[in-house]
Length: 522
Image (cartoon, rainbow, N blue to C red; front, top):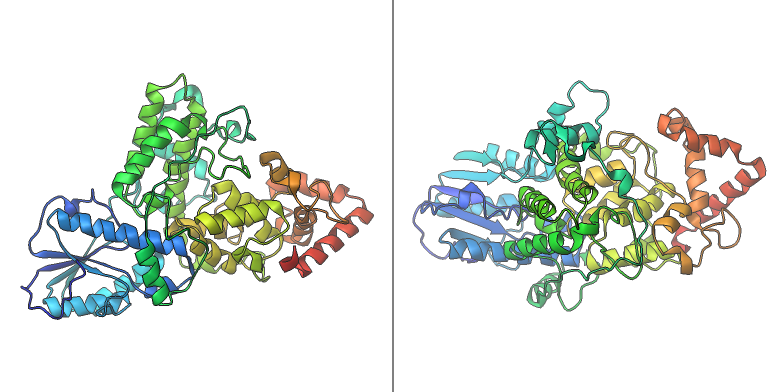
């Protein structure tokens, strides 16, 4: 592995196959038999470290998972070129490395798997046009859908409602179905999956994997790779191999699935992951497949229906079969224009404490602090605490996108961008979500225990120590009424806004203006 390919005379190889860092798919048809005239290449490149600043644990996880995957392929008898970031032969760009290998090896055909990121897809298409040898592209064989399937499903329809697509997927793949009808007579149990945590319920500790990645960390520091976030002794606690990913699936099904749905929206200071699977990194780099996850979860439910209710397994299935596939499909249907949208024309800078966690708002201190410490947070922490504040305070959605893409270990643009730019920041004007996902302090106080010992008072809209979420919430709807007033899902909110006493509204807006002017001090 990591061969010095320009210092040795090699036999001519027919095909060069590229494996990107999020294509670690040992079950792919490529790898089911040895092909002596084929060489595979994986590469760590500065190109991928600098297009956005990443969390240190994200970089460590990618490199460690890639190195282990290359080792497993080589052990299985495949010919591997692995370029480490500090390899003297590394050109540090995708095109440079590929062209060098093609020339040195007298490659006759270049092959690659469809990238899941628009940027890399365009780069590879352009690169292939520059080649004089044959090229071929393959599907990753990972998702339930093709790139185009979601776009085709909604073709000619005015609204891209995830629920209709989710029902279609349930029927197509015959999951949780009784013939053409959903098991239990109900498609969606989301209403049952919004509970505040009941402290009478026992919380199992998350399964943690031990990885000493200090050698990779030393290399990253030596090469001055830009990064942010924290890491304990070069360790990443999530699965970095297929074996570990399969182990975490089993742990989730046996220990967390019985309460997953009920408390999937709950947040606690003292327990960061609750009943969430933490499978997203292993899924998104494709160490494990969504089919493996869903099939094992459903089998576990079928065998333990006294302990695992239908809302638990339906809520989990909806996240992967519905939302994950829907996000990917919208990404490919709407890029590249989607990434440039800024519906509210928000221009404020991202608060500096997004990179330190040093804020007096206890919910943000915990959620951002957790993100910086673990490179992971669950979906309500990301959406209804962090993203909620960014939207209410008018932060530039492009800065928000870059932070989310960089900070989370599982953030690949195909899933991060529609979730952040669309659902969280409503920068798309309503393509992903039918209304902005914003809330005042009352929601955070209901779904968490963050507010009890906060510097700010969650019940006050203005005045000394009034929670910023409250005044920013009403300020958001007031200043955007010309854009949102006709949204049917916001009629009640605007009714409440118009019923506020003029004096109270004036004080609320003044309070919001003060907070926005000194956002770095909150």
